Image (cartoon, rainbow, N blue to C red; front, side, top):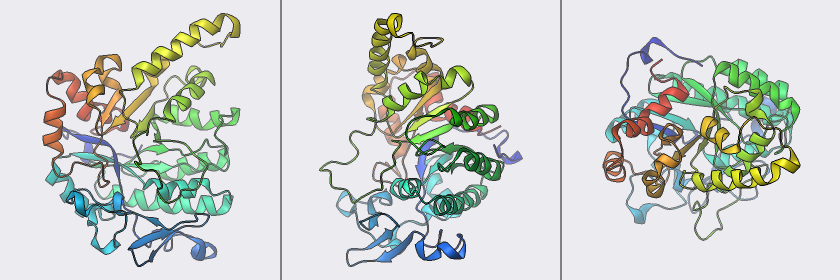
Length: 372
């Protein structure tokens, strides 16, 4: 991963394992080949506010809830004008000021989910790769502004394993780039195939953590229609864990680390218990061929990012403090900016100081190489 001497010896007290950018309107238009400029994601003006217009997506994708941290509750709305939101989403210098105000030493940066989902889902391989390369170039420049404070994640293309490997080689040695994000397995579907091992192997060899933000999907995003979006963010994660475990990924690549961002973790002990219960009942007949019980793989290879999970914190021993990463989700609606420290002090009262340090900074340091 890309590092600089600036990171060495720096003290980290709070690192967000899941923060976000607000992509600038010209990100793709300015960076893709001429043949794709008319098809590239772009912001257009509507009566209600500004929104992204993206190929294959029926609805304009507004971003107000992705850029409202710190506003009064009555001002948090789905529609907003890009010129009215805080600059830190696309301006790294402004972002450092926003982080300092909140007492956050470093952040791992994810894209806006519905934007990245639309690119991941596009089946035009040439278009797909051009849009991913444009984003990865932009985010590497962003985090390169202050690599000791930022962690960049490269989106991995999923229209062929060789293209995925080439993109890792192309961007992951740049300053501040610290891991990869997948919305779909590299070969192009939601079921792991043998050819994906090439990518898993490179990630394990290079000690690059694999991040899955909430869910994997091949579906294009749409306007929010649920009465209460976001309450079930962990629904997909157990399926991905079981898939990777029973596909033998970790038996073949014992150095591979996986981060589930924005899924919280209070559900993990229950899932571990249920998976093991069924495993021990069925293995004598099914002969799954695993080297250890499923819960052991979860304990060794998976990490979980949370913003609010009081139940999880009160039951931290059942998950393992070394598996959990505090996240601020800034600048999204779930963020407590600029009062993150106040919320941390309240929610982590009574937590063992060593466990607290791991959750707030130590695990992110280890996974993403901050300070090394």
